[in-house]
Image 1: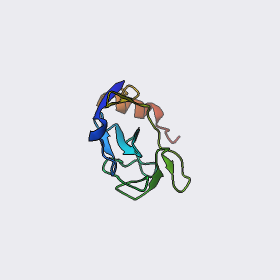
Image 2: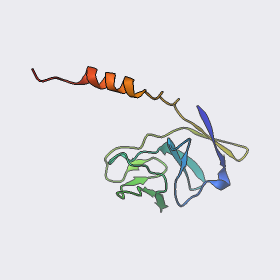
Image 3: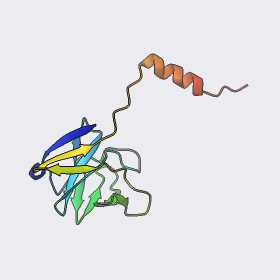
Image 4: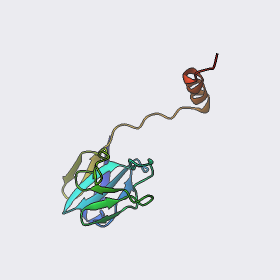
Length: 120
């Protein structure tokens, strides 16, 4: 699913912003645009609003740090899942995976019941 992030000048270089209903974040680093899943590796908190300082994205909740543009955790705990970015005539496009369909409450309960291990 291709999503427009607007013009390159609208994307900040000092923080990351949410894209596509909060599924992803985008930011500008050294003139290039990067996009990642909007989920910190620490406790899956959103990265949207995270500050970028000296090429490092800082999670706004628990201050985990990721080197940009790679998304590698500064402490070696993994890498943020990234998305391809393309700039065409000053407009930024991000290729995101198709959203997974939401389950109804009934479907969630049935799935939980199937996975639940009963004590015998």
